[in-house]
Image 1 (cartoon, rainbow, N blue to C red):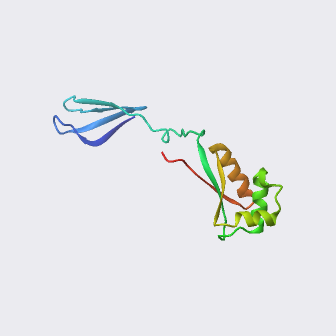
Image 2: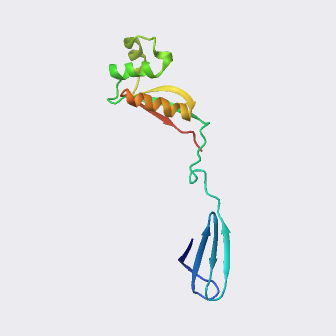
Image 3: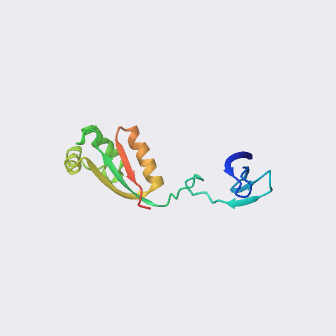
Length: 131
């Protein structure tokens, strides 16, 4: 792709022509022939590549600040380890704050868990590790 840029030639002051091929960029002056080339490396985020093997902290967030019976029932369905606890016992256990930590898990598992929870009316969030 060739486009005219607002860059000025450092030799003669004319506008430079910018040519891009992939991650290679060439600035060329049509008047005096000055050329400058550069190669840039896109970040993983720019390429749509994000590591999925990282652990994220998963938390259930109560809509009203306290868990409702429906949210506790959904939590039991989403987290197999909690399925055998009674709703009343589990509600007492998770009522200590506006959130309840489900621990760490790999990002893909957290995404799947969040999608399943949303279908049941439960809000799950996960926190990315500090970069």
